[in-house]
Length: 489
Image 1 (cartoon, rainbow, N blue to C red):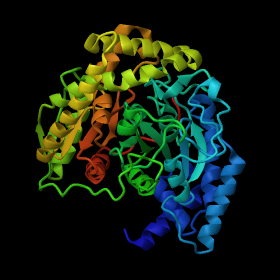
Image 2 (cartoon, rainbow, N blue to C red; image 1 turned 180 degrees about the vertical axis):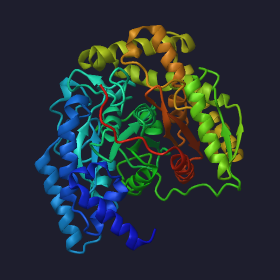
Image 3 (cartoon, helix red, strand yellow; image 1 turned 60 degrees about the horizontal axis):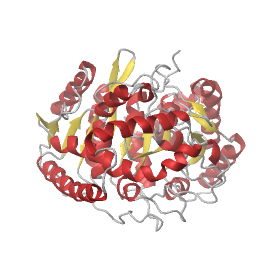
Image 4 (cartoon, rainbow, N blue to C red; image 1 turned 120 degrees about the vertical axis):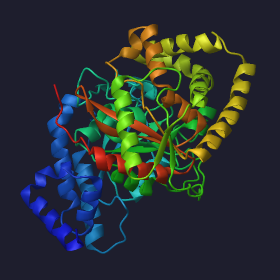
């Protein structure tokens, strides 16, 4: 389609209903705003209308300031009309998670005791979005301390999955995934140290990217608080969106320097191009939890789509991830144990019970009280596992694997019992293994099964997000997109 035809088609769509602009992708919004076909104010008004319509049912966004958002939209429109150089997200609505600092908002972490913890400056990734022209439209819900795969806390309440309220929208970026899937915002910010971008995206049928550690500048704690070693070496900020193209667009804004992040890698270069045809390692079972038939079907679909366009897909074993998943529960959880007095003081009962169950299962591998020697040896082993996975990715620059061994869990399955938590931890093995090793990965929807989203995960070499996005685009082009949707009851 020519540029003229595209513009005519967009004008026709706009003419049908400005109220439905919330349905558009961020890319479509940006193109139309930049050409003056629509205004940012119209887009923001449309998204605010959608929020008013569906957020009372889903509780995905816990703070929205319409006047502030509309004023920012007007500023974006003035920048365009005056011929200023525009950022890649100029005029596009984006939500920010409640555990990320946004100037003038409380960084609540979903904790009642932090409801007045006002941030006086943006976290680096939030500042990047603001510089790119994004309209920061609302604060998305998260479990207390971003600790669970379920989004519920005493301060903000429970967020529901728009596909099925009895299933989790994921965690910890469950407010983000629910908001994107239901059309409140086209892009949402999330963070991931144990699946908190990839799993919510999977649970709600949207796209979520966990970048390489060091790709996106961030802070997680106030600057005067020392971040733990696991946070410095494993946590990342990443976008959720309804399309792969919108995730790619968000990354153009997020890949921005800040001196405040000690792990940021300025000017990081992707690895050399992989040989063609690109070899993809298909991993069905990490040796921890057998995937359900629905998960296997999604893998088969994605493998077929990639094969059809020339990728060479072959099944492989990947035991390094099984070892890395258990090691996460030593290195991250033993560091987090230092925060347990605060958790027991101000955390809600759901988080406290989840922690109790996590530690009970981890003790089966590491003992009730792991020693300093175990911890030091664990970090030494981590380096070896990173090298092993890097070598595997030289032979297979892409890995296709499950996001989870199951579809979206039933609500609060993590706190039902230790046995239930053991099942969830096994199903989520790759959610922990990949952050421990610091590699990029993303979740991509492939369809529906039993009324719930299905999808797959892609894993690539460090700083090779482009290969992830390219393969995800192939899958999306065949599978289609499944959101935005009206919430199901």
